[in-house]
Length: 153
Image (cartoon, rainbow, N blue to C red; front, side):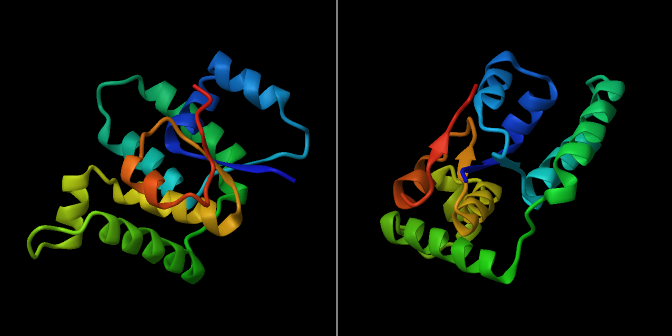
């Protein structure tokens, strides 16, 4: 059975019933897994808490949708996820070593790596899921060939 791990941008598109995303979802076999992980759910909730300029009713509707559709089967971050995370970070570091002694998070920012994306890729890899995102994730994708990445937008 094929399964997909949806990144934040695709969970949002699904909640808005984006036509491209809906067409893809409707073409999938009925037993296809559409999952999100706790990192994605946290990004959505954080967005709701820090965004004051958009429609609060719309944000509440997204929360209700996410809680109903993804929260019951959200993939957690586990000890084994940490090993995948470490492998991704290690591969990035080997491929793009810093030119000077620097903190890991500063070096990753310089490379354009979002740490949440590393965790999301780690979850997809751990569970053998196809990652669905519109994020480029260039540095991550060049070192993690084990995870197929698709964009439905």
